[in-house]
Length: 249
Image: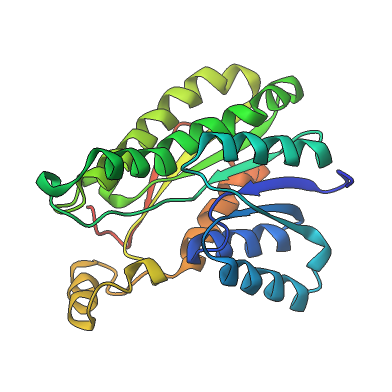
């Protein structure tokens, strides 16, 4: 597979935000490497959307279990067979856990951290040497507003997303001499399937708590990510940017 287009690897591309990011970057001229695991129907929606936009030849989907190190290693090796280097990495994949911390098991804690934090470390490291050689690259990590302020009943999730913020800041300093930008986006309440567990009343309350007076859309996050992946963000690195309608102000 050729490398005529810039390549963007997006984890969790079958979900609401990941799919929106993939669609936006494809329209911006990137070849999309779309990772997914347990939501094949979401990937089908992505492929159908890009097909309708005349971009069906600009995406390749890979199934990978991000909670399993061996699966990640296999995924990285498969991608490298087709692509010499990656221009953009969007570490978007994430799993939630809505549970009292006193009821949280070691296995649950480990899975949340494996997917939300460790996979970002492994995926990024898998393609970092080539970025350093090229002296250019964009890495965007998708955290959460709960990574900034924490959420009751979501301690494991909040802690893992907070770790991703620290990882972003430190990695940005380490990679800056190599011309690589590393930034982090913290979405607020976004209209995606992950929020289906909330009742209409809960969603209305969250909307009321958002200063801009609405629930976010995946497109809101995708537009910000696309900017951070573009040449227009070349002097921006190590930044933690909330995309939450003012929720965490």
